[in-house]
Image 1 (tube, rainbow, N blue to C red):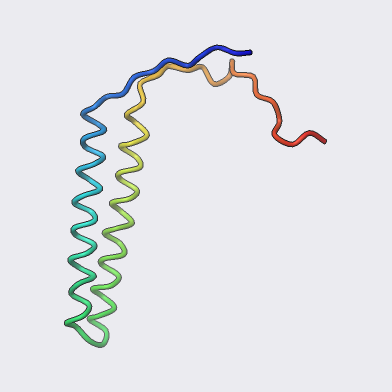
Image 2 (image 1 turned 60 degrees about the vertical axis):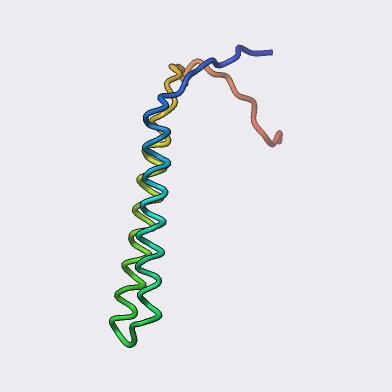
Length: 86
């Protein structure tokens, strides 16, 4: 059928990805918790800050997570079949 793709992971990048997720979650939850004590426009500022912190954390985690796979694959040599046949 096809060849197996064998790869490995850089576990330092896996650990970095987990740390980024933990710190981003902590920052987002802390900023979101401040919205309960605030009111008016400052409440929206805290809420936006929490959303931005979580978004940047998810993006950073995904970026570092995508770099952990060390398999060397030539994408041009992989033949794929269409999912839906006409």
